[in-house]
Image 1 (cartoon, rainbow, N blue to C red):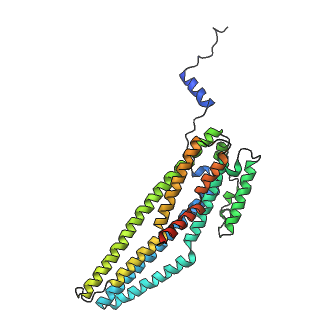
Image 2 (image 1 turned 180 degrees about the horizontal axis):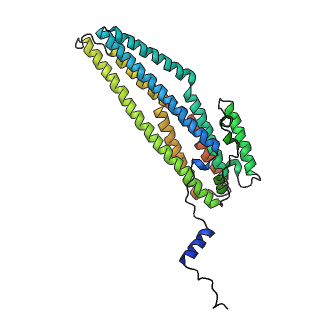
Image 3 (image 1 turned 45 degrees about the vertical axis):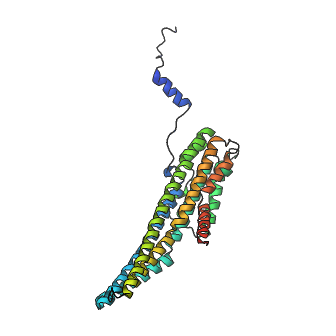
Length: 328
């Protein structure tokens, strides 16, 4: 009877499919679409508000420089038209300054960024059994919703506007199918995914961000130094009578002040040092979590990793860096 069986003989691809079914190979990296919908909305709003803030500040400083240059030119040429144009530019500078002061797009962008990173961190804690969402929790979904609502209530007291009040589509479940799927994976799969898609990705981001901030700091420091030396040179030449009636001291002083103000608003040096330190701490922790951290201590290690990536921790390191650089 066995010899008359019509069952096909297993071939090579049969065994490949069987092996894949037995131990799935999941190389699909998690992305923003796999995280809670409310995270995606706040991430977009944070980027939009922060971009608006930088554009407004840049326009404020550039128009101030144009106004000063126009005023200097009007004074030397005795042109009433150019003087009126300079006055209009100063008025525009004043209006933009009021908008930046009262609109506070930087504060709105910051609170949306804090909200987005808080939600993202909580989603990762839930997915990989980290922190309070460890494997022994009886109802992790209920705990996630409770913790999420508690965090959002705290943010509302700090001026955050709940996106669900204007986006009714966000009222549904914030735990996505991808989050359910990751939480259902065995420990080793969850560990590898977290080390790859969270810690490694964030360490690389902090490294690149630190490098960009450091290079920007060098460029703006060089620009400020060059403008200061140029101001010194023109002042000496004017004192020697080599510049005639032209006085560029005010224009160059305004340019130096604008460059310093831009550096202070962007905080390049504190960002560079803070991000570099976070990247080094994440790399150290990632190696430990890949080699020595067991499943029993996994939840605490994930909670520590998420603390290192939180906005309050980065803000604390930036303050320490600012204080250290201000010391004699």
